[in-house]
Length: 478
Image (cartoon, rainbow, N blue to C red; front, side, top):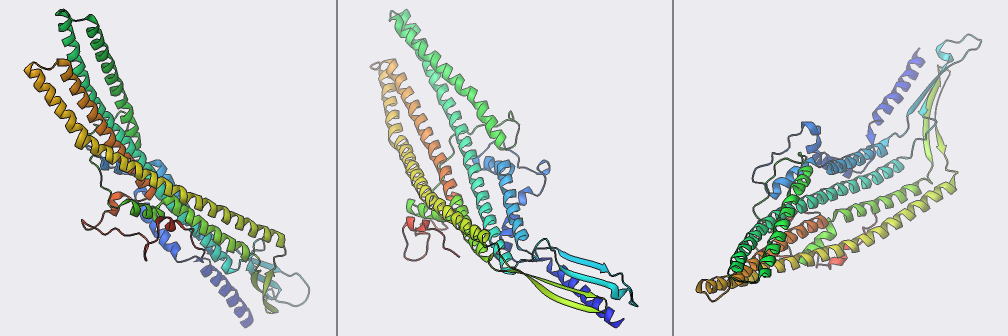
């Protein structure tokens, strides 16, 4: 009885240790930090969509209101978050240890002889025969690969956020620009109507009939253009409402003017250096490169045998403990895995290298276009509009004094309206390009605003300040 009790204690000890170890995850410490970031980012999605309290749309809508609601309601962004969450949960799957179920077998021996029932019972405990108990460094390495994949998914979530943000801001700016065009076109139609009415009086006074026909044609064409613009307004409204998860015909008043220009707190060199560190697509590829490096190390670990411990006893007759060694005799398969992992790594490094050059080129192009739009807006606002206003004033004075024709006055007014439209388009284009630049940077301009009014612009990287292209180096191998 004493021996039987000792054997039962051993059996339950093995089972207890197995239960305790079954909750173990062999993963880097950074995996917990990634899981925390994932849970914090998923706060808006904890409730089902039908139960979420989305922000109300105020009557005087600003771009901040549109963007806030659109980000909370966008399905693409929520889907990208759950892809990230699934990748984070795969870390636990890859690093869970032991990686194989515990297999327990019982057998009873029917034979002659004066033996107790317990001595006829054999109990064996060990890993499942269908799957080897992996060598712990292999499990840890697999968890590192899963962590890199999760980090890449997190960066893709950020990239999706800025992609949605760029589309929403562009749609809002197009909506605001369309409303400005309608306001200017209405003034233009009023002027052409005045010209047409004046032409009627002039024809009655003996002027040529063709002046009336020309004025009437210009008026009808402008009125048709106005109606076309007004027909586009509900289409733009439906697009914006869809982005905010609202009914297509829900009321949405356009802004009274183009939104004010948002400041760019850094110079072009600093923005280019910042893109090298914060671009979400580039960061995701960097994590995938590290993942391929860890996958290559994992493939090399397959040369190491796996060890399968086991224990058992047959009543009080015998007790045993041992270990089975799984020797990798399938060396061609292991070599093939290593070569495959190395090829994947080199392919990913090539993709990363090309993407960093493409990203740098896109940032430079966006900055040039942004600065050119700023130049155009400044030219219209500070030079062309004041000149057009002076011409209009002179035309009014000449018409009032009887020395200037009425058509010159009307033409001066139309020129001023065209210049105002050019200014509105330059401002809207500038804000659209700024949204494109934010997508490339992966950072909101408001988030990188300097704390003091006159900050010292320094390179993002520490040290003496490498060039922007140096910041695009391939990630170092771990």
